Length: 74
Image (cartoon, rainbow, N blue to C red; front, side, top):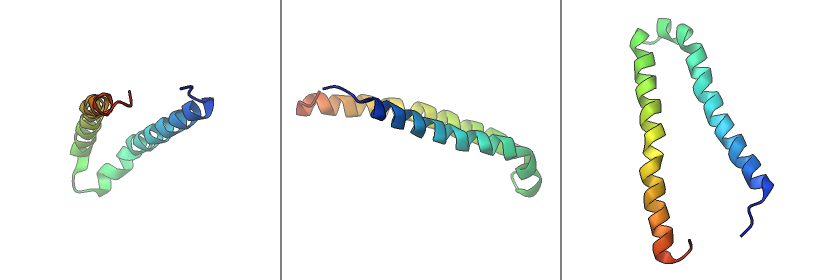
């Protein structure tokens, strides 16, 4: 099965948009810390959330890959 170039383009676009939103929140942190009740602990919360989400997809990929092998699609 051949993968089209448009699929790669859409995956790259999706990945770029998700990192754009993450980076925009980091850029707004100096303005947000003055107004939000979390204050300067907010960057710690954001860093923890980003790290958890970055490592959460690996078990899902392994489980989904094994499921595809079991049903015979891979």
